[in-house]
Image (cartoon, rainbow, N blue to C red; front, top):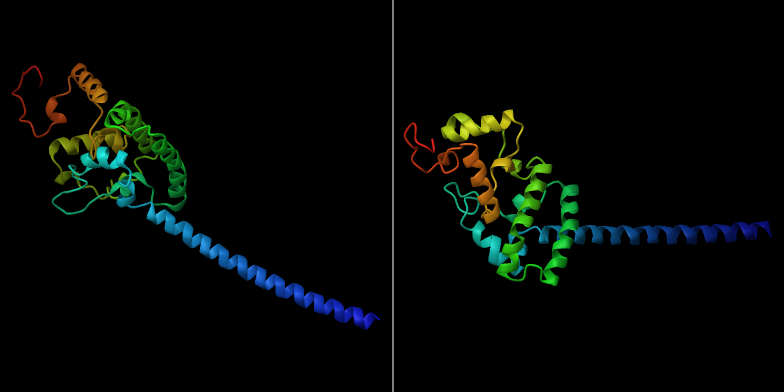
Length: 220
């Protein structure tokens, strides 16, 4: 009787092991397929084509971006939407994609469905992006622009001076380089011009294409 039980247990164990093996193999295959699909979707949504598939982006900020140096420049190096707005590191990228679900909700709600709605929200949207960049120490900017590799001797005097000052004051890229790829909100521009006038900041320090005023000029 004991031999029969032993044989029965052996058969049952073999069946269990067989089922366990095929179950494990099944879940491994499912896991690989899921992982592949997940990464495929990450890359699919990480292209400029995807970014401008919504009219909110295509008809507003993308139009401005096409007029910027990030879109067209003498070197032919182009920074696309994901280069500036999506982290390269996997964990940070996934977090950003999860956050983007809120933007998808507002797309379906029509929060920015017209140019007027976009303009009314522009200041708030810009400040959100600027704060994110500041919190990450302009992480995406530094993917292309390395402070270590920057030769200030080859820069214009104003740029070299400002970069040295920014380093001393522990500033990050976005503190000075707002409006590089997109127009600045009107309210922000007005506030900045008022501040510069109060602080006696010369126009040409920002508008360096302007001729410098003579000494003792009221704006000098």
